[in-house]
Length: 252
Image 1 (cartoon, helix red, strand yellow):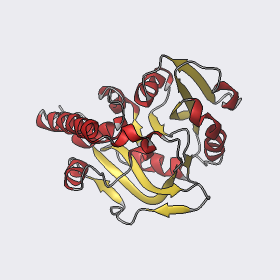
Image 2 (cartoon, helix red, strand yellow):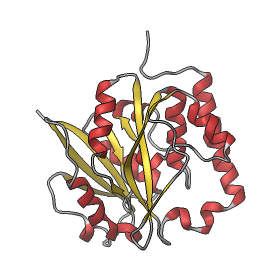
Image 3 (tube, helix red, strand yellow):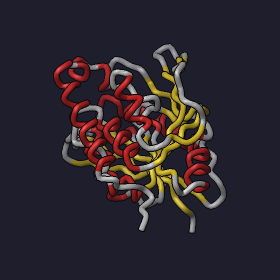
Image 4 (cartoon, helix red, strand yellow):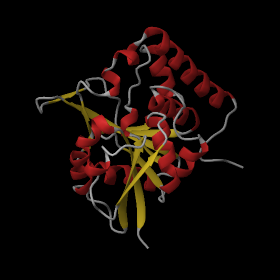
């Protein structure tokens, strides 16, 4: 029986036309022998605008549900995440060549690692790319390191939550994504950091599309009062997890 890595994507109508580019990037992934991918696309809401852009492929599952934001959509998708690992892919982004194989190599090779991240290139509207010049070193990220950096750098983490690949049981134990209007993926990253060692790969793992319609480009995303509230809840959760010393992997 083949083993599966699950790719989870939340989508709404404005970003649906990017799904074909995401699909192409998944199809071009080369996995180790015995592995296959299963792409779960969860629409945030119920419309007739997304389905026409969903690839007709038996390895792709499309679902719809009540609107609640991308975090809710991704968490609902976990109901059919029938694999050992869950890889995040936003609808408007693309996986870089070799991304899934590198994630699997780390998680299969070291059971003490609960999650992986990788280098990101911004994909600009003209097709050019732009990298971040302060990536950490390639290798393990010890518990608490992301929170420390995030707090010291105005709530900016040194690794990108859009590149996460997570052990499914760990993701479920943390309840999926945070119930926030935005930054729900950062909330998950900080929770993972509080309970488990992670990993960063300096190989490019994701092309992060920059475009006017993306959620992070909207005015509400940068509203100062809401941002402070989101960050406060994210930090409080991470510190509570660290204080109570829940750890992955669990010890006797």
